[in-house]
Length: 76
Image (cartoon, rainbow, N blue to C red; front, side, top):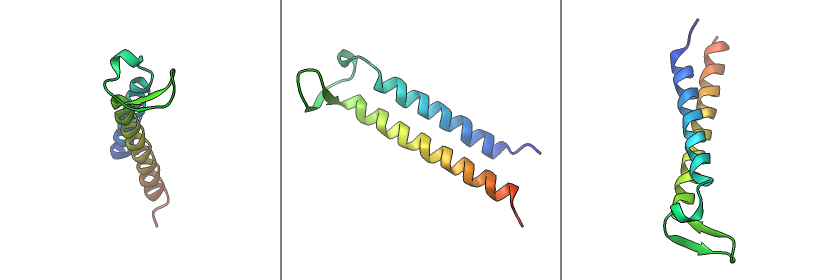
């Protein structure tokens, strides 16, 4: 039996995780204003926060898809 809600949540989770990782690997010139300057080579910039939020959302959706799948598989 196909569970479209689980597939949709898992697919959305994968896209959010990929988007978050792609944002985190952008070069410094494209990341926007600097929030925290750590040293000459490292800084936390605006898009780093967006990438972190997308990764957290992707993990939460992935977790939710797993919980939904387990509830449907082991429903009593």
